[in-house]
Image 1 (cartoon, helix red, strand yellow):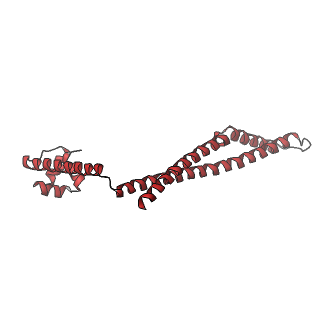
Image 2: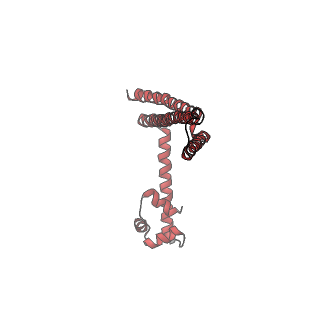
Image 3: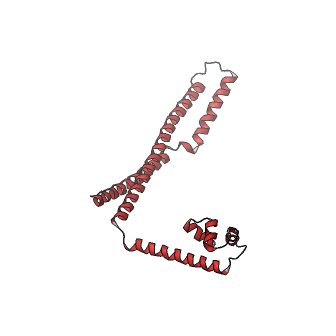
Length: 191
Protein backbone atom coordinates (compact mmCIF):
# COMPACT_ATOMS: atom_id res chain seq x y z
CA UNK A 1 0.00 0.00 0.00
CA UNK A 2 1.32 3.44 -0.94
CA UNK A 3 2.22 5.88 1.86
CA UNK A 4 -0.55 8.28 0.73
CA UNK A 5 -3.11 5.49 0.81
CA UNK A 6 -1.96 4.50 4.30
CA UNK A 7 -2.31 8.08 5.50
CA UNK A 8 -5.73 8.42 3.92
CA UNK A 9 -6.85 5.07 5.31
CA UNK A 10 -5.70 5.85 8.86
CA UNK A 11 -7.05 9.40 8.89
CA UNK A 12 -10.18 8.84 6.84
CA UNK A 13 -9.29 11.69 4.49
CA UNK A 14 -10.62 11.74 0.95
CA UNK A 15 -8.26 12.34 -1.96
CA UNK A 16 -9.67 15.84 -2.21
CA UNK A 17 -8.98 16.70 1.49
CA UNK A 18 -5.53 15.13 1.28
CA UNK A 19 -4.78 17.25 -1.80
CA UNK A 20 -5.90 20.38 0.09
CA UNK A 21 -3.59 19.55 3.02
CA UNK A 22 -0.59 18.91 0.75
CA UNK A 23 -1.41 21.91 -1.50
CA UNK A 24 -1.66 19.89 -4.70
CA UNK A 25 -4.49 18.87 -7.00
CA UNK A 26 -6.64 15.78 -6.40
CA UNK A 27 -5.40 14.30 -9.66
CA UNK A 28 -1.81 14.60 -8.36
CA UNK A 29 -2.80 12.53 -5.31
CA UNK A 30 -4.58 10.00 -7.50
CA UNK A 31 -1.60 9.66 -9.86
CA UNK A 32 0.86 9.41 -6.94
CA UNK A 33 -1.21 6.66 -5.28
CA UNK A 34 -1.19 4.70 -8.53
CA UNK A 35 2.57 5.22 -8.86
CA UNK A 36 2.24 7.11 -12.13
CA UNK A 37 3.63 10.39 -10.83
CA UNK A 38 5.68 11.68 -7.92
CA UNK A 39 4.45 14.46 -5.70
CA UNK A 40 6.29 17.79 -5.70
CA UNK A 41 9.14 17.81 -3.17
CA UNK A 42 7.39 20.08 -0.66
CA UNK A 43 4.17 18.03 -0.74
CA UNK A 44 6.15 14.81 -0.37
CA UNK A 45 7.94 16.18 2.71
CA UNK A 46 4.59 17.15 4.26
CA UNK A 47 3.23 13.67 3.54
CA UNK A 48 6.28 12.00 5.11
CA UNK A 49 5.98 14.20 8.20
CA UNK A 50 2.29 13.36 8.48
CA UNK A 51 3.01 9.65 8.03
CA UNK A 52 5.61 9.64 10.83
CA UNK A 53 3.34 11.65 13.13
CA UNK A 54 0.52 9.17 12.62
CA UNK A 55 2.85 6.21 13.31
CA UNK A 56 4.26 7.84 16.46
CA UNK A 57 0.77 8.53 17.76
CA UNK A 58 -0.24 4.93 17.12
CA UNK A 59 2.85 3.65 18.96
CA UNK A 60 2.13 5.91 21.93
CA UNK A 61 -1.46 4.73 22.04
CA UNK A 62 -0.37 1.08 21.88
CA UNK A 63 2.22 1.59 24.62
CA UNK A 64 -0.37 3.22 26.88
CA UNK A 65 -2.74 0.31 26.33
CA UNK A 66 -0.02 -2.23 27.16
CA UNK A 67 1.33 -0.51 30.27
CA UNK A 68 -1.87 0.43 32.05
CA UNK A 69 -4.65 -2.09 31.71
CA UNK A 70 -7.64 -0.53 33.41
CA UNK A 71 -10.26 -2.48 35.27
CA UNK A 72 -12.67 -1.45 32.53
CA UNK A 73 -10.50 -3.09 29.87
CA UNK A 74 -10.23 -6.20 32.06
CA UNK A 75 -14.00 -6.41 32.36
CA UNK A 76 -14.36 -5.93 28.61
CA UNK A 77 -11.81 -8.65 27.94
CA UNK A 78 -13.41 -11.06 30.40
CA UNK A 79 -16.86 -10.22 29.09
CA UNK A 80 -15.64 -10.83 25.54
CA UNK A 81 -14.13 -14.20 26.51
CA UNK A 82 -17.32 -15.21 28.32
CA UNK A 83 -19.32 -14.22 25.25
CA UNK A 84 -17.06 -16.20 22.91
CA UNK A 85 -17.33 -19.33 25.06
CA UNK A 86 -21.09 -18.90 25.35
CA UNK A 87 -21.37 -18.56 21.56
CA UNK A 88 -19.16 -21.61 20.94
CA UNK A 89 -21.05 -23.64 23.55
CA UNK A 90 -24.38 -22.82 21.90
CA UNK A 91 -22.92 -23.50 18.46
CA UNK A 92 -21.72 -26.98 19.44
CA UNK A 93 -25.04 -27.71 21.18
CA UNK A 94 -26.91 -26.66 18.05
CA UNK A 95 -24.73 -28.84 15.81
CA UNK A 96 -25.26 -31.78 18.17
CA UNK A 97 -29.03 -31.17 18.08
CA UNK A 98 -29.00 -31.16 14.27
CA UNK A 99 -27.06 -34.43 14.21
CA UNK A 100 -29.45 -35.95 16.78
CA UNK A 101 -32.35 -35.15 14.48
CA UNK A 102 -30.46 -36.68 11.57
CA UNK A 103 -29.75 -39.76 13.69
CA UNK A 104 -33.44 -40.08 14.58
CA UNK A 105 -34.34 -39.90 10.88
CA UNK A 106 -31.72 -42.53 10.06
CA UNK A 107 -33.01 -44.84 12.78
CA UNK A 108 -36.56 -44.39 11.50
CA UNK A 109 -35.39 -44.94 7.92
CA UNK A 110 -33.40 -48.04 8.94
CA UNK A 111 -36.51 -49.45 10.60
CA UNK A 112 -38.50 -48.76 7.43
CA UNK A 113 -35.83 -50.45 5.29
CA UNK A 114 -35.74 -53.50 7.58
CA UNK A 115 -39.53 -53.70 7.44
CA UNK A 116 -39.49 -53.35 3.65
CA UNK A 117 -36.76 -56.01 3.41
CA UNK A 118 -38.80 -58.43 5.54
CA UNK A 119 -41.88 -57.71 3.44
CA UNK A 120 -40.03 -58.42 0.17
CA UNK A 121 -38.55 -61.63 1.59
CA UNK A 122 -41.96 -62.76 2.85
CA UNK A 123 -43.60 -62.04 -0.49
CA UNK A 124 -40.92 -63.97 -2.36
CA UNK A 125 -40.68 -67.01 -0.11
CA UNK A 126 -43.78 -67.41 2.03
CA UNK A 127 -46.52 -66.95 -0.52
CA UNK A 128 -45.73 -69.26 -3.42
CA UNK A 129 -49.43 -69.94 -3.90
CA UNK A 130 -50.03 -66.34 -5.01
CA UNK A 131 -49.94 -66.16 -8.76
CA UNK A 132 -47.48 -63.41 -9.57
CA UNK A 133 -47.65 -61.23 -12.57
CA UNK A 134 -44.70 -59.70 -14.38
CA UNK A 135 -45.35 -56.37 -12.72
CA UNK A 136 -45.10 -58.01 -9.29
CA UNK A 137 -41.64 -59.32 -10.09
CA UNK A 138 -40.62 -55.89 -11.36
CA UNK A 139 -41.88 -54.26 -8.17
CA UNK A 140 -40.03 -56.76 -5.97
CA UNK A 141 -36.83 -56.29 -7.96
CA UNK A 142 -37.21 -52.51 -7.65
CA UNK A 143 -37.67 -52.80 -3.86
CA UNK A 144 -34.55 -54.95 -3.61
CA UNK A 145 -32.56 -52.33 -5.54
CA UNK A 146 -33.79 -49.60 -3.20
CA UNK A 147 -32.90 -51.66 -0.13
CA UNK A 148 -29.46 -52.53 -1.51
CA UNK A 149 -28.79 -48.92 -2.44
CA UNK A 150 -29.78 -47.70 1.00
CA UNK A 151 -27.62 -50.32 2.72
CA UNK A 152 -24.60 -49.37 0.62
CA UNK A 153 -24.74 -45.63 1.41
CA UNK A 154 -22.56 -44.20 4.16
CA UNK A 155 -25.29 -41.82 5.33
CA UNK A 156 -26.87 -44.45 7.55
CA UNK A 157 -23.89 -44.91 9.90
CA UNK A 158 -25.63 -44.69 13.27
CA UNK A 159 -22.50 -45.39 15.35
CA UNK A 160 -20.40 -42.80 13.54
CA UNK A 161 -23.11 -40.18 13.93
CA UNK A 162 -23.52 -41.02 17.62
CA UNK A 163 -19.76 -40.57 18.04
CA UNK A 164 -19.89 -37.15 16.35
CA UNK A 165 -22.74 -36.11 18.64
CA UNK A 166 -20.77 -37.15 21.72
CA UNK A 167 -17.72 -35.18 20.56
CA UNK A 168 -19.81 -32.07 19.90
CA UNK A 169 -21.45 -32.35 23.31
CA UNK A 170 -18.03 -32.74 24.94
CA UNK A 171 -16.83 -29.56 23.20
CA UNK A 172 -20.01 -27.79 24.33
CA UNK A 173 -19.41 -28.93 27.92
CA UNK A 174 -15.79 -27.69 27.82
CA UNK A 175 -16.93 -24.28 26.58
CA UNK A 176 -19.67 -24.22 29.21
CA UNK A 177 -17.04 -24.69 31.93
CA UNK A 178 -14.97 -21.83 30.49
CA UNK A 179 -18.07 -19.67 30.10
CA UNK A 180 -19.02 -20.22 33.78
CA UNK A 181 -15.43 -19.47 34.82
CA UNK A 182 -15.33 -16.15 32.96
CA UNK A 183 -18.87 -15.25 34.00
CA UNK A 184 -17.96 -15.66 37.66
CA UNK A 185 -14.76 -13.60 37.15
CA UNK A 186 -16.82 -10.91 35.45
CA UNK A 187 -19.30 -10.86 38.34
CA UNK A 188 -16.41 -10.62 40.84
CA UNK A 189 -14.98 -7.60 39.03
CA UNK A 190 -18.32 -5.82 38.93
CA UNK A 191 -19.05 -6.39 42.60
